[in-house]
Image: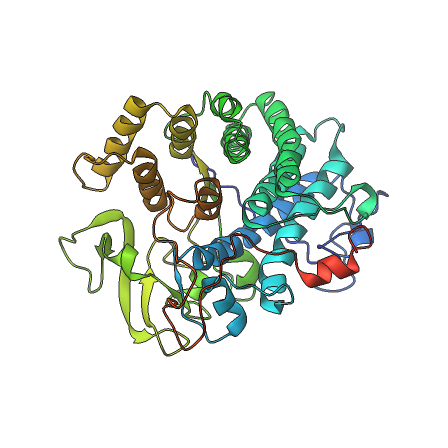
Amino acid sequence: MKNRLNTRRFRLPVHLALAGILTVAAAGCESFFEVRTPNVIDAEDIDPIADGTVFSRSAFQTLGSAYGDVIRHTAWFTNEAWVGDTFPTRNEFGRRAIDDRNGTFRDEVWIPLTRGISQGEQAVEALAGVQGQELNVARASLTSAYGLTLMGEAFCEGTMRQPGNEPGPLMSVEQTLEAALPRYDQAIELAGGLTGAEAANILNASRVAKGRTLLQLGRTADAIAAVQGVPSDFEFLVPFVDDPGNRGRLGNGVYFFSAGGSREAFVVPPHYREMGQDLTGDPTDPVGDPRIQFFDSGRPAQDNTLQLWSQLKYPSWSASIRLASGLEARYIEVEARNDPVEMLGFINERRAAGGHGPYEGDDLLGELMAQRSIDFWLEGKRMGDWRRNPGSVPNILEPGDNYYKPEVGTVFDQTCFPLPFDERTNNPNIS
């Protein structure tokens, strides 16, 4: 069953600092909805126990909002999409030349992601061990764990909020990924002891994401064990809505930069157009792989340089984004087990889903990564795939004079996002 959790129901706008830390008062509140300022709920007005569902769902929505940002920037970085934007700070992603003082990077990737992790941690801290809050703690644990997985896959280093709202120390990639594991375990334990569709969704999403994290760590046997029992048709979807006044938080962050969004700068590159379906003009019998769909908007992108070939995976502000699935569990098992017969059979299954014949080459891992890059196109998985299998992920730009907008600069050799300068210098446990 697909997850349709209505995370729009409640919003907790607050002022945040140092990775989005929200200070929550433990004292009760007799009139939660009697707020002094319309549309703002102050921290001292929140009773996290009485309003645990509100609190944990708000944390998940914060991560969901950051998820689109991570997808967009990792897509630019790994040549999964092209940067049709004038901002040099965004072109730094396409050129793999991110300056740690890049303010766009700090504001659009680092702060949203760490804010989601922090709010998940705060919800767990406030609600753990309280009878009746098991589902909320499971949801919040999945929230912070998944944020840590995204951080470990994308960043060269990490850090996270510590208990008591203390900023954390510098963490290696391995430490960041390892930090996610006990949080997944907590979500699995709590959700596994509950009934209902939402608990089952959290349980299976946590299993898949834990397997993903273990695979990234090279713990293949543990990764296989983690995803056992996940239904093949399972999907966990992050929902979004089209609220014109809150599209930045509640709308799909990939659509934000696509045709019809607020800044049309997210371009489908030619190597994906060659294999996918061009739905320009709504053809009655489109050719190509149906897992990749796009159209020609008929106008340039925001930079007035690239043509705006726009993705159709997320065709609106309210389009959901898949966070975890039974299909991903299968990919994790096949890659981790590394059995040539099993891998070839699975590759041919996925090729058939795209309308292709059986694979006849001998680079099984390369073809597995090629199929994975199609099945999970624009789902935020390619960065981890590339760092885990650097020689097998297709269409990565090599360093040198081959940026698709040569007037902007050359491609550098970064393989991960740097820790932002502001975090490094302002966090007393790092600086």
